Length: 148
Image (cartoon, rainbow, N blue to C red):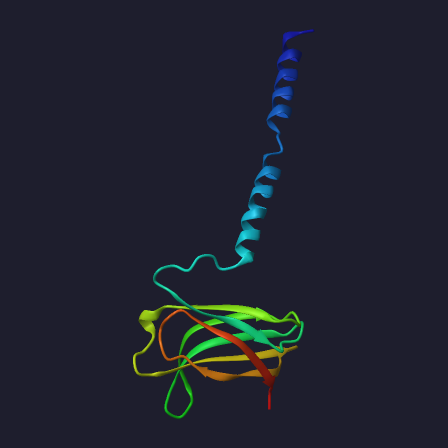
């Protein structure tokens, strides 16, 4: 066999050997990281506080919005401190709403408010829950009611 043919054949074998399945390995390593992210927000950083509890009465397929708001003397929202969006499952829906206690206004009225919509239409709301302190708190079970 001529030397030129051996060189070409060697390069072809080298290229075939270098063509590995490395992207498949990277994909399988990235999938567990994505699963960990979806499992929950992770440990609570020292600079944050959290409201947690369970939402009841949310039908499957509904989109739930929770908001921690500063409310004025007329009952109108003035500032958003934290918000979260969840998808209804038809069962009790646990929530965790994290906020920065440094932006929590002293002496102001702060409320946790919630609403659920389905196909873009408001179907349920949560009675406002007053939050008096900027601490980590468990609200317990909160019942959604039919929207007026």
